[in-house]
Length: 121
Image (cartoon, rainbow, N blue to C red; front, side, top):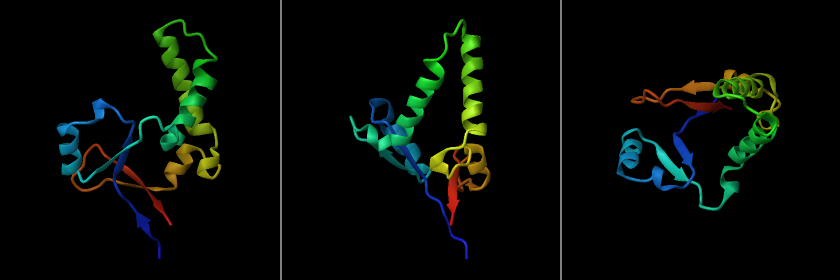
């Protein structure tokens, strides 16, 4: 028997822009649990910090952008390589695109803009 586990949780950096009644109300209405990272604890978001470092080192620091169009084109080429060509050790040496294709995408009842990738195991 195959088990599929899905749950909704957003993890955001701690900040005043992510606090308040509007966000709390939206999360409650959509059955979403909100989890904030602890201030000053980058290890709470290690995968995000890793991505940001790679993006900065491999794309931003390696290029001088001559225009907004040039920056967009260069960043998009890097993004496509990162997601479609480059295997990631954290994904079992699959590309993010391959990983997405091998997992189930759930669209929970009552949501329109929220999709959660659920691992099959």
